[in-house]
Image (cartoon, rainbow, N blue to C red):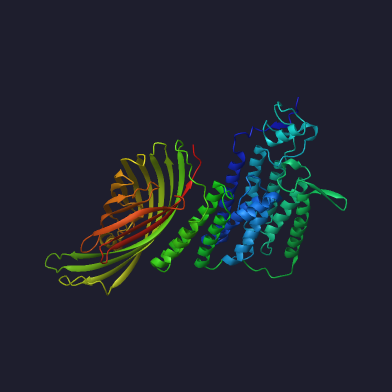
Length: 616
């Protein structure tokens, strides 16, 4: 009978313990990093770039260090990543540290920023240890006197013991092994406690991270004596140097931990002035180039380099930075269209060549997609307002010249059923600015468009939840609709502006987002909509048009017709909009233009990146 100290771990077969805790650890790390950056007063955009770049470098490092020597040639020559899922946090620590060191100076951070990664990394590593324990990777030697943890059949410890002849294949569980994963978890918690207790010490920048590395590397060196070589992903073989036999990974750890302790001691004991931490300067161009560079790296890594959760974590952070950069261009300095086109151009150029798994081809399966989008646009319209005088007073006439810019992004989750029916739940968030020029006019004179008396700038914002459905198989008659709501400061026509200026603040606005279409999508269809997505922001428009996919069933189409919105002398415009599917149907470009061929126009463009999720 086994002693009570032996604990049976739930079977990991057909479970996703490792990947679940792997994703949770990344989310915890990113959340803590955001909190730490806010606590230190770092600007959000460069801080997000630094943390996302460090995360990408960490992920790549965990995999590169675990690639067998025989498979390096295929990766180097053909970009083919091995099918193995082996990872090592040692490679991640090296890669993440190098990523921070490379980006730190480029983005304008001082050495103190390195310390911001110390606590979040320990907390995330501790959480991941739970997933390792449940999965059975990184297991230890046979436990003395029977205490330890037991693993169910078909797990790694069980299969290793069967291969060694220690148990029969029909055994109910493995022999007890040392819970080295719990040893590592305890190491992380101890390191956390030491770091927390020294948080008020005044050390040169980088010293806190060096202390963390020294503690973790030292603990890992000791834990390796208890870890079974079969549970070691990297450097499990023994090597003898000067009569001392250690694992190869221990020989690697030894100089690293000595270097960390020595460097930490030297920095904390050096008689030097302690330079204070300062915020990095605003460098929007460098931020945009860094986004493009990191996206290019994900593309150059090749297929199989990043799992779907890893790709979502990396690209979500970069997408947020892109949106924030566009908003910053709008908010500070009234960005021109070509300035707004810079971040969108960078994103489209890189996303077009970014690798992604193709959509599942099994037509009998339910397919699911996550679509991330960024967009921007601007517009113009005029108003000619005459206030009739009462009780003998004369009429007054005022011209309002509206110019607005908007930018933002969206996220949508779509389900495609075998019948062809599609259901989408989405959320758009948009931000912008509206500049209104005001001028008094002669009640009996012409409408003059120059010589503003005054100018007012108002902020625009919009939160747009919506649901879309499409019924049909893509080749015959179909019907689709969209229902949503716009909530925010959607625009400032003269009536609303004058109430605002008189002190009667109206708070937020509500507007519908509705669309219906019917026909054969690839041949000819009719569509009517009001407030469709970002078109509602600035100058809400109603549209009626005819469209065609020109024989294509990949989602591409062109739609043209008539649009109505506010404008003097009349609000009628012609419009063209559409959707262009490229890059294996994963990148969707959605342009929109409407104009009366005079002073009234609306321009919009969206880039949406569609990511296939697991099919069911």
